[in-house]
Amino acid sequence: MQYRELGRTGIKVSEIGIGGEGFENKSYSECESIIDCALNNGINFFDFYNSNPDVRSNAGTALRRYPRSSFVIEGHIGSMWENGQYRRTRNLEEIADAYENFLTRMQLDYVDIGMIHYVDDERDFDGILEGGIMEYARKLKTAGIVRCLGISTHNPDIAMKAAESGFIDVILFSINAAYDMLPASEDVDILFEESTFNNRTYEGIDPRRSLLYQTCQGVGVALAVMKGYAAGVLLDDSGSPFGKAMTPVQCLHYCLTRPAAASVMVGAANTDEIFAALAYETAADAQKDYSTILANAPKHAFHGHCMYCGHCAPCAKKIDIAAVNKYLDLALIQKSVPETLRDHYSLLEHHADECIACGQCMKNCPFGVDIIGKMCQAAALFEK
Ligand code: SF4
Ligand code: SF4
Image 1: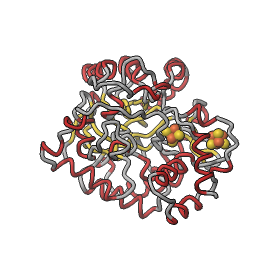
Image 2 (image 1 turned 90 degrees about the vertical axis):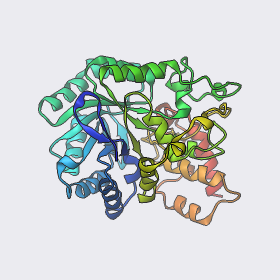
Image 3 (image 1 turned 120 degrees about the horizontal axis):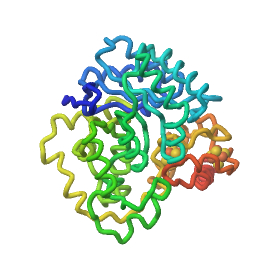
Image 4 (image 1 turned 45 degrees about the vertical axis):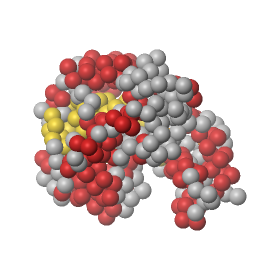
């Protein structure tokens, strides 16, 4: 395993890290096997955006079997659990309670990176910087509860502001070959317009993103990468905007060859997915090479593609939107819905037909997904 400096923090992290999504809906022993596989193969970097108390307790119990110095944790500030669901909060009291809960359940005396959670909006960013949230985060740092501060965002403008703020040492940012080619005029709300990839020849990396990576490198702000596989879309011939699937190794190489990139946080649901990422460490240069794939002009739009990130929560009817969308997408690539998939869907606590079309979730989706339409489609497909 290769280790990289996490920007100016003085922390060293494995270039392959583990994101929190793979720990969701898992038993303790499944969480333990992910953590054991990661640590035993040299992965020392974990991002926990999760507010689910079971995930926190499982991960904490599994990690405490290892010396604290053997792993580096990103713990999200502003991710909370309410009525059995994740919710992002900007309420200081809720933030403090949720972080206390994180530390207790994770059995941590300190967190390496206190990550201010999911900031895609300029007003939100300014509110955090000028208001009590940044003050709270800095108090945590002064008290030694967090070692340094980070921010998670999908928006290059927010990431640039964070890099230039002087307060933020690590940015958890969505990077992959598809996102990077989006033109400079796009902001996060219109990233995935139908026209984005149509009739466009590949023009290299969006200069704004390129400038962001260079700026981060220049000021010593590290990039921890999320969405390195674009939630699996890049791994699929039909989904990839390049008309051809990339391998996990090629995706990882793309991310790790961006300036300032320290680690790619892979959302591994099982040990096979960890090993698929670990293959990067022993891959030959020819296996890492992604240039032939990028040479294909992207023609497909990403608009409406669910990345299964869960940012749309909470749902007014407690539907696990990311899970419904995942099952729907899986079903749509088959001729008929397999019984196993129908079973998985039926085991969900709340189903798509409960959607009341309130639209609350759509305001939270950074990828412009027509969630109400997806719920209708899922209900029609799974519940007929
Ligand atoms: S529109 Fe449907 S899925 Fe979205 S929050 Fe409302 S009930 Fe939930
Ligand atoms: S609908 Fe949007 S916010 Fe929800 S999981 Fe999909 S991409 Fe994420």
